[in-house]
Image (tube, rainbow, N blue to C red; front, side):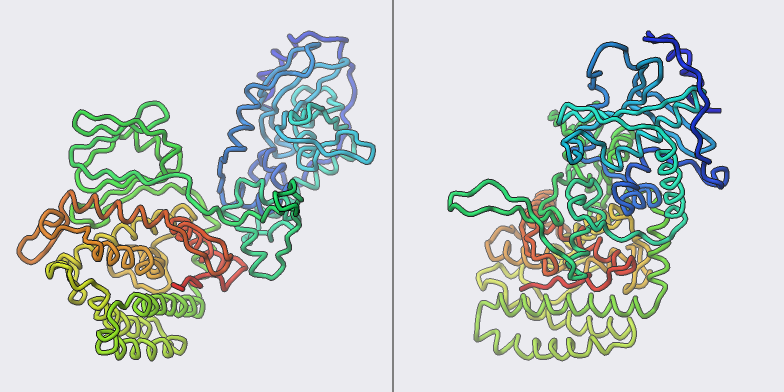
Length: 596
């Protein structure tokens, strides 16, 4: 039975201009297998007619992103009023049909000329025909048709017309509910079911003008795929003339250059994070800070700070990851903010079950890491004499390793080559340090678990922050962190997190750390807690390290694939999404990142 039945009495109480005219339904047979399929949202048909990949991401992979345009549309549906006041509207009416296998919520229903009319409200502008008359867009039309058909079935009365109100133009487009409209609806439902059974994402939309307005462009990365296939063409709209008299052209929107939110780090053991409405309330001693949840992309608790259940629920509702670290900087646990994503995980499992794919990705990853380390030593060597005496023979060894990486036949061989290059790299770091640095802070090889000197303490803490960032990025993209292609699952750290970290260790922590050491920003006494056999950061040292890491994430770098200058925080997410494209039809984009 239709969910509309409970609303019929309410509708019948609305004023009528004329008595309803009884008529038989215009009928187009609903899809034959409607009983065997789970129902579809009417909004899903709107997405289908807009872009088939958008439909697949939302309905099959369950990836939905509410951007500013989506929130504005929701407000419009609450605030919109009828363009005339002849008949009041019944607002936000739920409708469904087992015959069609559809359900949804029509914006408004009203009585006009003795018949019911389904009304949709849209923020944007309408399409115009050759004579300039307002017409609905294809996606808006199928949505209006679906609502009218469901309304007709629920009322057992004809609904001969639907209307789409375009508020940017202040006009209404009319949609006739005839046999052609029902056939189009039937075809859309059938196509939606075909895509829902598929395990492969549809290709990006041929019309690239659809992509900048899409809320899932950051997930789909259509322009990055077009670049990869050398099918990218710019068809910009001319902008007003600039000061020089020429015509400016708006470049296509690729991956956004900067993240819009920030990470909230809780360092004090007396801090408490609670909830106040739609905001997070941070209390520390007698100080309180209220932070809108929309401004936060993640919460990281270092040590013994407390987070209330209510705050965790608010974070989960808004996709904000919460992570906990031990006092020593070891990742302890975290919340996942990407439920579902079954098809994404299936494709990841299938792709990474291929030994050839795993080995190919591992080769590229190791090559990128070692080449970045080599270039950094070459660029940052301060003392030419020391470089010739100490670094040159080690870098010659690294070049030999780089020549062997493409020929490696297994992950074990790559691990050996990476280890050889890492020993040479860490040996060279001493040449990059200013001679005036206190001896306690100078590097002397690599040690960890636990770190036994101050330099390695700083390295380990920064790598833990990087692990946290990469873990969040993978979960946000929808990948399974436990299934990697290079590292083996021997520790508590998920292998895919360790894999992706290799791209960024030098870029996001080694470089800023050595720069801060050379600037004299670290106090050997105040910033560290030294105990027999291990060294930890003090509270002051942790705050300083977090500030250094977060500052690095705001700095920009030109990504080699897109040629676009992005913040490092965005580059981490972009690389995670490019990694997924290795098994979703657009390989070869991952791990091109190098230090120039």
